[in-house]
Structure formats: C-alpha cells, structure tokens
Image 1: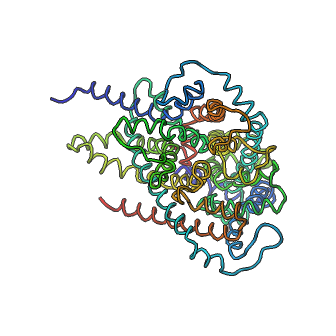
Image 2 (image 1 turned 90 degrees about the vertical axis):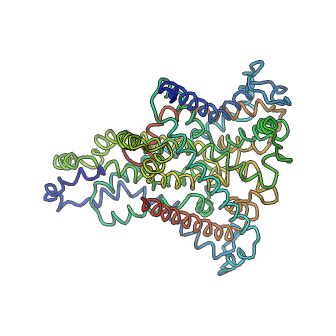
Image 3 (image 1 turned 135 degrees about the horizontal axis):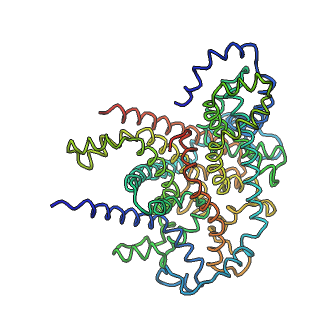
Length: 309
Length: 279
C-alpha cells in the first residue's frame, strides 16, 4: 500500500507535532462536509428505520403504528413477488456480467494496431444513461418489426407473442440484458486492470507446463483476479439494484402481471403513488437487509473460492 | 498441423473487433434510426443505413422535445452538485488524512460505513428530509442532497493525500503556512489525478441520474434531461406531432457528451473505481 511511504517520517515529526493539534482548522475544513453529510445522508439512514414505525402521507405529523408496517409486509403478496423478482433480476444480471466481462477482458488484453479504437467500442455503453438505454432497447425489442424479433425469425425461433418486454417470463431477462449492456464496460475495465497485474511470466510458465486454455483460466487467471471479481460483483450488485427502478419505471411499470415488479419500484410506488411513506420506509429497511445479506454472501463466497487450491 | 501464430493473432483481432461492434451496436443502431425518415424507421424489416439523412430532426428534437431549459438544468445540476461535492471532499479528505483532532477515526469510519448503504435504500427518507426544508422542485433541493453524498469522494481524496510526504506539510507548517494555503498551493495541485478520477465518475453519474431528479425536481422549470428521455421511453408524444426519429435524435443528443467525455477520461475512471494508482 502506498500509505506506508509516510510512516518513517512520523517519528521525526512527532516532536514538532505533539503540541500542535488542528481542532480549529479541522472544524473549518471538515465541518461543512460532515454537516451536510449528517443532514442528507446520516439522518435519512436513521430516519428510514424510524419512519418504518409510523404511518404518514407527508401531510401533518406521522402516526405511531408500532410494527404494523412490518406485519402488513408479511401479508402483502406484492412484497414476496417483488423480493423474488429482485433476487432473480440481480442473480441473472450479476453472474453473466462477471463471466462475460472476464471473457471480454481476456479477449482484448493484447496489443495490436487500432486497439484503442476497438476498446472504445467496448466502453461506449458505460456512458449511456439507463433512461437512454431504455429508449435504445425499446427500439430493438419492438414487437413484430423490431430488430430482435427479426433476428429470432432468421434463426428459426419464435419471438414472444406480446413482445420481449410484455410476455410473462421474458420481461425480466429482457431488462437484465439492458442493464448487463450498461454494466459490462466498467466490469471489463476492472478486469483488464487486474489482468495486467498478473505477470506474463506466470502465464508463460503455465503454458510451458502444458496447461491448456481452460486450466490456465481456472488455476492462474481466475485466482489472480479474485479480488477484482469481488469488486465487480459489488459494483454490479449496486448497479442492478438501482436499475431495477429506472428500467422498470420507464419500460414496464412492473408489468406483465407483476413480472417485473422489483422491490425498489414497489418502494417508489408505495411512497409516491400510494402516499404510504411509512410503509415505503419499512420496505426500504427490507431492501437494506437484502443488500447487506447479498454482500455478506459475496464475502463468504470469495473466502470459499480463494481457499481452494 | 497447428495453426500459425499469425493466423491465430489475426483471428483474435477479428473477433475482438466483431464483439466491439456488437457491444457498441445498440447505440449505433439508435443513431442510425435518428438519421432516417419516419417511414424507414417503421419499415417491416429492420433498417441499418439511412437512405437519406434527416439532420433537421436533430433541430426539432432539440426544440420540441429536449428544450434548452432542460439541457441547462442538467448542466446546472451536474456543475453544482459535483463542484460542491468536490470542494467538500477534498477539504474533508485533507482533514482526515493530515490533521490531528478528536473524532478523526470515528468520522473516517462513518464515511466508510456509508459506502455500504446503497442510495436506493435511503432515497425515500432523503426526499422526506428535503421536503421538510421546503426544497422540493427547487435547484438547491435537487443539488444539495446529492452534493452531500461525500462518503466515496472524501475517502478517495484521503487515500491520495495520505501518501503525500509528511515533510512537505511539516516544513510548510513550520514556516507558518496555514492549512488554507496548504490546500491551495500543495494539496489541490498534487491531487490532480485523484480529482480527474473523481470527476470522471461523478459527472457521468450525475448526468445520468434519474430516480432522485424524478422525486426532487419533477416540475418543468427544474427537470433534467434524464427525465425527458425517460418520458420518451414511456411513450410520451410531447403534445406535438413529434416523430420517432426526432425522439431518437433527442435521446442521442443527451448521450453524446457523456460518451465523448468517458472515452477521453477512461483511464482516470478505472483509477477512481479501484481507489488507487492501479492502472
């Protein structure tokens, strides 16, 4: 870690610094940051927990309802539907993102004339907003005469009857494709950074030992990028959780038959459309626990993967 | 017999390029559509090459769909949200990296913990707080809650500033230089790479942000581009006889600045994501 560089000088300078503390200057430098952070990040985090015990439509003062919001969640069929959809959406998004990104990074991890232009093609989707991606993919997914229906026909497949976005069973994976498209470039960039840290000599040694393509990836490259895999998984997890609102609100509104009702969309709907802000806060607590749970799972999975030879 | 090394290399270049074209394809397809006539976009077989160019659709897309006011709102939002956040983060990063005061490690951990709490879970209560201040549908209400998300930036600058040689700071302090002078003359210039990485991530994130503006700035005088583009996706016809290519042109106009910016700064982007000098 580069942070170590500063250490040897500490002993020398401690003499001068012992008397000097920077309380006043720190207040001036850090005060505005901490104040705004507390009001608009800290308070909302704690507020989400507090508000989950109240009923409130934003007017007047909130009414204490104890655990009523949480018991209502248990009996609300949309909660289990949206939790299931969210888990499915995240799993069907994060796993392909990780593996496709590693494959693509391996594919373009070499030098040739024009590599800069080719890499740029890979990176373009990262800069496209989810809103614009929604417009793009709606064009591609258009029923009957759309590009994807056309390709399905050419390949002898039957495109879904009500279009990709509105046929049960097709809608959620179709949204996943959009979000994979926007998330891949960042994942590829991160894997490229990790691959460039695996010494060329290690890979060559494996080749001389007669390791084939698969064994090289499995035993040299995959362990070499495992730290980055964790980061890619975390970044994708956050991206897919957020896009579970943007794409759903723009493209499907939770349809068909709640097939794309994600938890974050249901939170928004409860608050903004139903004016049940306490209930939305309780759902936010559930969303928070879900993400923390998945993060813990990822950390555990990494330990498991690293321990194996 | 084994395939020659040169053939293998050529095959790899071919596939790498092919995959690149497929990945950029959806955006290129939209750009092609934005240049076509309405009839060509609606054709029964998908069209890839515009048979005639319709650049006037870009003028109409700008005037009828996006409007200068919305574009300006997006620019104001990005400049102020990112600008204010940057100022908060670099000063805060300097404080937690080099200053000695009580509560330093507690504050540092507070920022670190906040990184694990996704914005999507706090957006509802953040709206409630902003609403209590009476700031909904105002520029400050749109900007300040985003500028206040300083966790990532403060830690990014802390990591960078902590590696700056301590002697530089000690010497300057012995000479009687104040922290403000140190910040301007030493920290800001030396932290330029960190600033580049930070800006690369923050500007694109802010420009593309949708849920927060939708909640906090839904009125026409404060709405931003992503809300208009979302309305296109939702099938809004904008009260005029706006054609499909004009809607696509409007979408392309919002995308191009970020695509160009991202391609220019992509090495900085990786540095920002990995939080260190890893390239």
